[in-house]
Image (cartoon, rainbow, N blue to C red; front, top):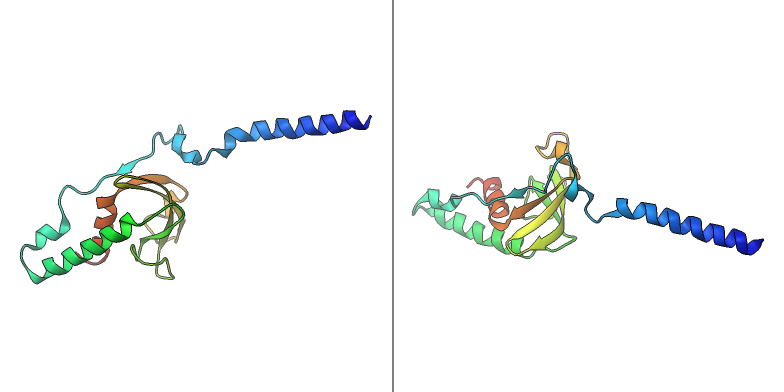
Length: 147
């Protein structure tokens, strides 16, 4: 009788595990039929620093672009980033939207929006994923610094 109950218990565990497998996809939003494929945020066609010509602002912009590029290239899975109010800095109190790196590929970073304050432009897209080209994140850095 004990063997029968043990077998029934083991079978129940196996069956419950099998039914949960479909819901444990690593990135459930990747194949969301309502939203389709994951969007790719492309880099802008024109470099922000070029607009400053040969002025002193251009030199500062080029330096900021270098720092943003280095920061973005060093992001790895698990890193938390500030998506609004301080991209390139540790997400602190001034950060309006936080995200996490969930995947990387050459010239792209896949981010998931994890926490956004109500006054953030990211508020309605929490838990969504998107691929960002390196240039798009560098542009975000530059725009937040007024270039």
